[in-house]
Amino acid sequence: MSALAYPDHITATYYLVLAAILFTIGAVGLLVRKNTLVMFMCIELMLNAANLTFVSFANALNDISGQVIVFFTLVVAAAEVAVGLAIIVAIFRRRQSVNADDVDLLKG
Amino acid sequence: MLSAATVHIATPAFDWHAFAPDLVLVATMVVVLVADLLLPDRESWRTSSIAAVGLLGALVPIATLVHSGHDRNLFNGAYVVDHYALALKAFFIIATYITVLLSVDYIREGDYYKGEFYFLLLVSTFGMSIMASSRDLISLFVALETISIPTFVLATFRKHDRASNEAGVKYYLIGVLSSALMLYGMSLIYGVTGATKLSDIAAYMSQHGTVPLVAVAMFLSLVGFAFKVSAVPFHFWAPDTYEGAPTPVTAFLSVASKAGGFVALINIVYFGFFLPNGRAADSWWPVLWVLAALSMTLGNLVALRQTNIVRMLAYSSVAQGGFMLVPFAAAGIAGADGHPGKAAAAMSAVVIYLLIYGAMNLGAFAVVIAVARRTRSAEISSYDGLWEIAPGLAVVMGIFLASLAGVPFFAGWFAKFVMFRAIIDAGTGWAIALGIIAAVNSVIAFFYYARPIRAMIFHAPTTEDRTPIVIPQPLFAAIALTVSVVVVVGIYPQVFARVGELAF
Image (cartoon, rainbow over all chains, first blue to last red; front, top):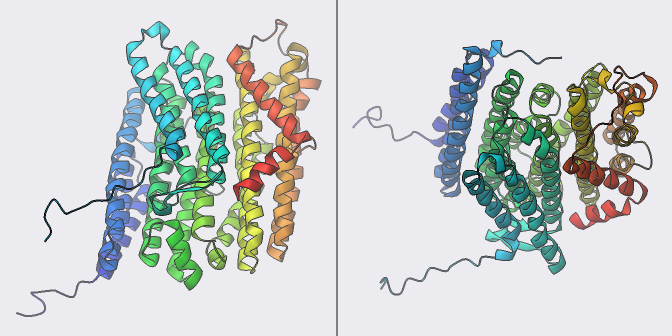
């Protein structure tokens, strides 16, 4: 079997680079997008990039704690989204918009 | 060989006494939530009494743990109950107790959801209590999120009010962004050191020193913490959130929640990246140096042109956060310079500053709430002639503002004193430069803290109404408690100096 068909040389580096790219996409998306729901998704992307980094390091180091922390992160992320969506719904009821630029009452 | 009968799983020893303060908080949470469900609407303000009793009850096991005198390491040192943790647990619980006192009438008179308010407050306090003992990246992260998530809801608590909605969504987006940055930083720390426990990380770092990836990881984590403690340039959410959130929640955010962020910072930089020989300190002190200098300067300069007292106090709390970062930078400089012994004193300066800042800032917000009960306004102009209308309130407000400015013989001067002592101890050029910036800023701060005082004494009252301002009993108790701490510690600072010494 050729090396191309059976890629057994995928190392932790590939996963770490993928995670770094995902994290960057999330961070940039958070800064440039104006829809709060899309901003939430970007934050999820960043958290999952961190999860991927934890898991690939745990695999490379042959250590379980990096995989355990992912479960905690998932629970925390779920709680955050529940609270975040509740806040978005409260805002939408008042303004009929989820655009971050419309939230501009307080400044100075 | 291995049959079911011969397998013996050792049960880890569980120290109930060490967990007692946290368990009392959890029990109180459950009781508050169930009581709110069972009590009729008219009676549901009683949940505040349950919360207050539970918080005071949590102080009892803290006292017995202090009395028992020895440090307790649980889960192989991932959860530590020592004097440092106990001092901070007590601080968090008392700060929350004062917040409950501030909230009772505010929440009862507003058409809000009463029981949930105290429940969320207690959950956040529980997170802080865990945070003080956490010595592991996992529990540190979970504790920080347990502090933050309820405060997102608390900031949005007046859900029909657009300003409160806005305060909540801004705080939420910044809060979760900072968690994501911090978590990514932690994942890189884990990758380099192969450990999540801070003592293992410290052992690795003291052997290998700072490698480039650790510097990147620390930078990401510190940016995350900078959002939590609202350090410049990551502070922009704070004034909007402070102004829009209900005022008792603002008091809680600016004291307890901010202190939670600082304790997380102490845990990670001191227990993870400083002990035992200070070799890894160069991975974090330059970042904290810059954050401290920017927070002090920008916080003070922007506070100068505020007309709303809550916004002014928000920028003042950004600047005070900068002052609290100064001893961190001093400790790091001393460690990188080869004098790790000096760092303990600098870290106890942070703890002392936090305790004193907590008392004076909660007190200032208590007066703001008391005055707003009559004026329905937080503009500084609404303090015109307060001296004639309510001399008592004017005097205590003057004391809190003078203390925040650092006038001698109120507690604030001692906080500034220990901060400058940490600078002088470190003694290098970078430390002295930061000390000069701090000194200049201490002078600038006088100008804006003096403005409400001038309005209270020298301006004529804007209304003809001379009936005294009615202060409800809980609010009066909160003001009396904080003002006595500010005055007693100002005259007899050994009280808190001893706490700081014991902690490290």
